Picture (cartoon, helix red, strand yellow):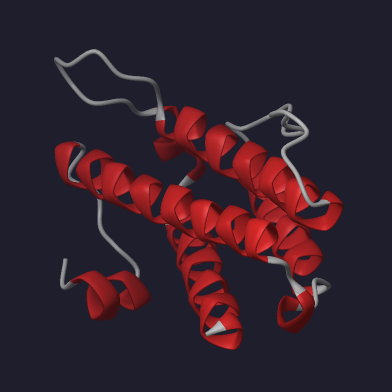
Length: 141
């Protein structure tokens, strides 16, 4: 179960990276037309912050608060770097030795990442953008 959780997190993190790599940089400034929303960049800021915060919580065994180091969420290369950095950090965690409390935090992180996938699908459709092949295969978009 622990290795499966790590595999699911790896896949979710990879999908997020694929979408950002696929989008043009100006797409990061788009929001949901005619609806109250933040921008795609705001979604990505939250993803990076959650990855950083949950990973820190998993490593320490408890929630330490939310923080995000992503200062330029509208700059594609900066976002891609942050996504890679947070993915690499997660890969250093030994999932086989996690306590139940740490596993719950890891499941919360997976839940959070996937929630943003759903939100990002809405943004892509609303702005008539396209999806990378990995998203078409995973989510049938």
